[in-house]
Image (cartoon, rainbow, N blue to C red; front, top):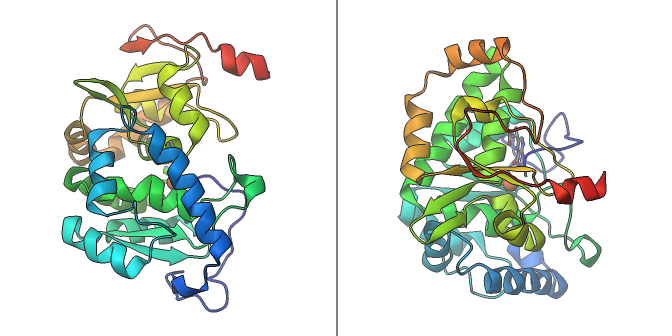
Amino acid sequence: MADFTHVYDAPPPGANPDWTIPQSWEVFSADEHAMWDRLFARQSAMLPGRACDAFMRGIDVLKLEKPGIPDYRELNARLIAATGWQVMAVPGLVPDDVFFDHLANRRFPAGNFIRTPEQLDYLQEPDVFHDVFGHVPMLADPVFADYMVAYGQGGLRSLGFGALHKLARLYWYTVEFGLIEEPAGLRIYGAGIVSSYGESIFCLDDPSPNRIRFDLLRLMRTEYRIDDYQQNYFVIPSLEHLLKVTVETDFAPLYAQLESLPDIPIADILPEDDVITHGTQAYAHSKA
Ligand code: HBI
Ligand code: FE
């Protein structure tokens, strides 16, 4: 997950200058491995027919069904062979420039802690289950792997334009909460969804949220919420399309254009939207 309330100003004691730390896999307790297994069993039972093809392939190729929190020495051997990506342990959220630099260099920073039983369904900072189960299977897909590199490079550039706030929406609505239209129907590829039991069902089956076909400018104008299920999902036609749009768009003029356009309130539908579901928003309203 990408939003946060607190980050350190400097790497904590014991961390490297790039904020990475040793995974120290041996140090995870039996209870911590059991928490991974519990989360893994619950999610993987639900994902056939919900998660996209690339995600299901990633679980397979990386052999994530092996019990316990993955040991990065083994996981990275498989991931590097697939796409050149690797997972690196970090203490928690890292500063934006550090995060983007890792992505641009095919390193995915993963929180080196696991949620407690009290945090089973919701936690503020990304833990190893969200980061590894949620994000890493897609990084074994060559096209998505290249998209994440392009995002990291774009992120570094966005800092120079003061446009991180707009670009962060792209990460949110694709990497974290993206849906894809496959021949068999809508499927999940976003890590924030695929690591959440409730949202994996809600995003596909509930009549509440809007499901709108992906348009980069529209998406980057759209606000999002970090405290509950999304009110909008953006649906890509393919991973190739997402990569192509991201590498072929010149973001400098896009940021200038975004400055002149108002943000779109969270649940609004515009006349020009290519809508799959015009959501009832009943779920969000029930909580208001
Ligand atoms: N750090 N560990 C970690 N994980 C993230 O997802 C993350 C981060 N730092 C910054 C950040 N995300 C955001 O800048 C982007 O997602 C936009
Ligand atoms: Fe995430």
